[in-house]
Image (cartoon, rainbow, N blue to C red; front, side, top):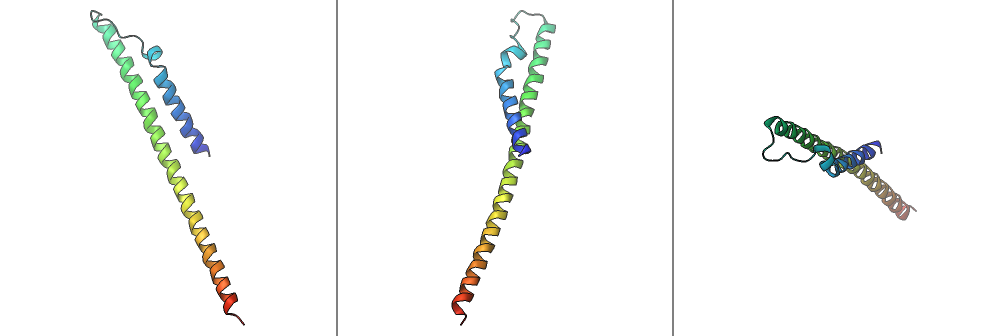
Length: 99
């Protein structure tokens, strides 16, 4: 359950990062801006983009873990259901053939 909450939190955080793009990165400097201003903008842009991408990579990794756990749970449940079915069938068969 905690893994699903953390996955959802990372997804919401990533979406909020995407929505906050204009306020976080800021406006691109005009073409005649000094080089230092362009470098500062590009630095903010690269760090922001890298952070956003890493957030979604972590979200995807956590989602894979959630799917793997769900698959294992379904597999165990299917095995248990099959065992119960076979046991019930064996008992029915024994009841029919007993005198």
